[in-house]
Length: 89
Image 1 (cartoon, helix red, strand yellow):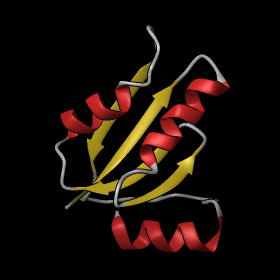
Image 2 (cartoon, rainbow, N blue to C red; image 1 turned 90 degrees about the horizontal axis):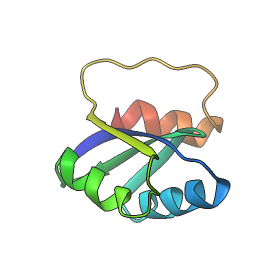
Image 3 (cartoon, rainbow, N blue to C red; image 1 turned 60 degrees about the horizontal axis):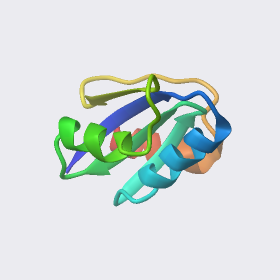
């Protein structure tokens, strides 16, 4: 299993909600901020991109990168998310 950082840019709140619902289907997930989530899966980056990208509209963007070298952040969404990020990134 690998941890991926998924960032996305959508034109509407409806599109953002569809992306978030897709991201919640992965075995482990954590919102980093409004347009960026971390997920853990056995899929490859391109598979994640294609799966989540199915709900994007024309012109909306997605970027998927495997994490694992080094990470730093400030003001995560609470203690639970902070601990998830420490454990999985």
